[in-house]
Image (cartoon, rainbow, N blue to C red; front, side):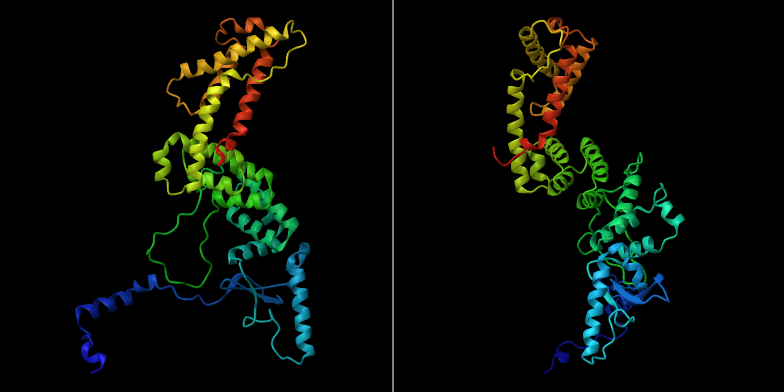
Length: 404
């Protein structure tokens, strides 16, 4: 007995068949079964008199080979190698069509997106007034990020430098990062996927992680500083701490790493254990930082920073002793002013201590007679305090170490 005898066909008018046909007619079943997208010609950069056809993802571009070899790019070497291969085929009496001559045999670029290649062609073919817009608030930041990526890969050095300058100009504006997401949310498992359709794929605006990555990759310090300023603000607001930490460690952004660890540490161990974005190694370093910063705070009052005495200082020994007493008093006063500060909140404590010292030196609050013993070194006391606090802030990441 064959299988059909065990499972007779359902009648066309059965409820199950009716439901299935309805889903198929509505296209609902296609949402979870995206098919391959056929190559299509780019509407802007399939140029009829171009002499090279390139396929990027599912998009065909027809452009001028001479344009792609500008700026001593990697395409110059690529086309030279392609020409040598074609010459060898000709010598061997091979009749195969040369790569890049037609839609059927295009030059295939691997690892690039159509949006990135489209951004490159925009920069190479653009008119002057179109390039001018890139240096204004009306610039297309997504296009500029795509341009930097592909010019870095194919070594369009002058174009990349220009694009990075445009990006820095765009993101250095006040409020430029207000609507920038930190990262792209990944779709939930099993979420339906729209069926493939011809045409460009919608692209997302660049995220803070992508901008940081690009600035670090291209070693662009000014753009990286803009990104780090945004990360610091997010950390101060208590947002995306685990992502900030991971990004900081990935690109060795020590200020971001230190601030992220410190902010996470103050959340407590229960939060660390519940945070899915933290690795086991990061949790270990948080614990190490907790003990290291607590130990530092306990020893800090007895270790005043070196004081540079003024030329009119009559007794450096007496002055240094007075400053040591003042240093201890300032640190202890800070915790009395704000008793709610956590014992391990070294950053909060030293910032408060610095403010108290400044207020005493500028006579906004009484110094309890400590500054009377160092009349010519008052400003030096503030400078020494500020330098020590800055040193602690800059080395904050060092306290969250595996070696403890």
